Image (cartoon, rainbow, N blue to C red; front, side, top):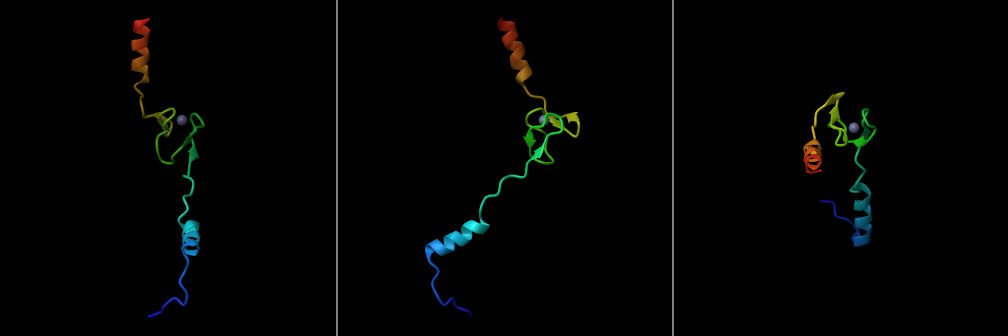
Length: 71
Ligand SMILES: [Zn+2]
């Protein structure tokens, strides 16, 4: 069985690991509806559109109407 000739120092091993275990930035795509950065193949969190259709309906409108009633 092959044995390493020299002990690899903590710094050497950690620096090697840091190279291939580094966190790469998420692959974001632009929303065609509002231009915001979003995850690919997912509905846009900003406008709730996916494939040109409104998919996510936020509850903000309900809170707005409650505020308007209070006024
Ligand atoms: Zn959008």
